[in-house]
Image (tube, rainbow, N blue to C red; front, side, top):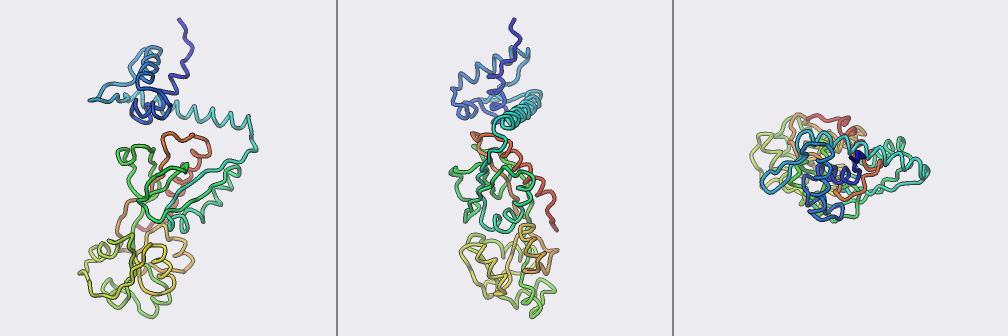
Length: 301
């Protein structure tokens, strides 16, 4: 009996276990459903045990198979890293990252130098989107969006949660000195800055603060949040802003959070990697770095 490990079947098994679907595995690898099924059957025969069981109309990996797949995935990553080190160690890799504008400007880009310091052969090219819900049309290796890392929400992507977020009141320090905000009701004396892309920010904060809705209060509404944020920095009024995304603005004194105990929890940020993406060490290292930076981020919520 030939006991050589069927590496082709092993690769197909890793993709099937990761995507949770024979059909999606076939789409990623360019194979038919039947070809995937035959390769999985061959690996099960070699191992002497079932790797997938039928659940309704889908084939679901067993607990032992999921643990095995995780180890296989790590092994493939190590093989890829070793091959790249052996092949072209000095070659520069470009990692394309799509991110919301405010998040990119205020949180991601200021931290990229830290990533480049430990991964000098990787160039991170950031493109921005003007809305958190912009379609995922491709053209990137990693997309950063706000939401939950639920598989059914991102059927074509692997989602990794990395940063929690909460909204709070933000204001220019000079404006705060002229018109203090000691309690939530003090916002009545200010102009409220709002964004068309974040229509519920003020109503949610008012509810959290226990205040009635003030429809007649003076407001200035801008099309995108990054414009609203600049208006707040310029002292044109008070706004609602996300933490810890704005922690640099707070630490530099451009903005102040006068009522930090009043926080509105928001969906955090996730990193989305297409299932058909080339799982390079650069890609894996970047996602792991995001998770580490998210864990280290100062967050008052």
